[in-house]
Image (tube, rainbow, N blue to C red):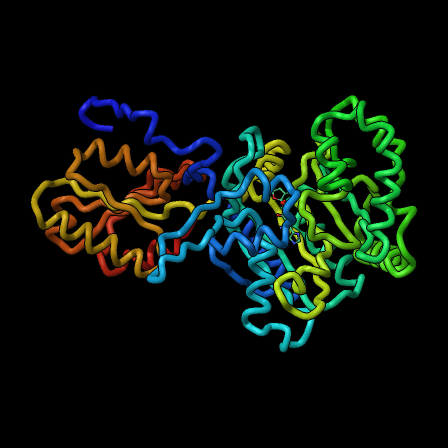
Length: 443
Ligand code: HAM
């Protein structure tokens, strides 16, 4: 910063609590994950989709479920401006990606395409007004996959295999655990829930406040309680995996068999119930071995299309929290490949306009030739420009001095030490030979 002034910014202009800027130095992590995820998704036949950041509130409310934390407490919902008839639509910032994709699948008649339709979304922002804490933000970003239109258990296993392959590419698979479960379907789950309620009824007075609410609103979530006092009750509760109907049992057995063929080591955790109401049968989470925090979560949602007026459409998907994966990469000291280095830094040693003209032109020519190049702005001193060239990490300084300008030449200084003979070597070449010279000596 120049001029010795400090920037004092009033609190009110800072980023909101739970919202973060993603600064340039973070971007290598984002590109690393995005590249691995997109490449693997394409290997499995997924095509990219983007849906709007806002939808009618009913899209999320009806699919995620009225009794869920997300719908009850965490959505950013507001009335839009009134239309000509004075009607105001209640709309919400997307808290999750699946509902929008199912809406788009139905709205665009994708059920007429060969099934399953395999879609992925990349780094889409999601908004949940949660209590901000490490790894939990009010805006987070998800890479997600959704396969719609087929109930084959091979698809469940393949999707978990796809995630496994992404984490393997990122070098993370050894630090993760894969948990799977089946939470049954409309046929067997209601009976299990009655069984669970029968079990909990005599214990309710001794349960935490939240569990007392869950008992009425969302009994499956009783199993997700984190209060220490309720853990022994959870441990002794009836297990859904012991109460699946035959078709669900068969489906789950096949998923496990196919997971073996996909080379995925997993654990069955009958306590995984997920925080959204739309799941049926297979659910899964990949968590860090360190703290059990989920890096991704997903499962089947065979009933969602019908909620939106579509035909029965079995489907499965997951969402991967990019910020959570970055935290895990950092924890494991995995450093993504660096962005391409600067090749050339063009400097000029006179304030005469002709020098600046030459530098602007040469820098543009280098960039047009695909060479990563930078120049010094603001007519700085010779010393300051060379300092900038050094700090940029450029392999070469391209120097325009008096002699060079007068004779159509440039001086090229090798900036990087790679054997004493070559570091700091300086050559004078014709201006029109510069691009070829840099390409030949590319670092
Ligand atoms: P979810 O488990 O709510 O599922 O979120 C997916 C992932 O997003 C989580 O595993 C976590 O990594 C990340 N995540 C969630 N909330 C936050 C937060 N507040 N801050 C940072 N990261 C967060 C879904 O959203 C489903 N739509 C997944 C799905 C797709 N199921 C079927 N298809």
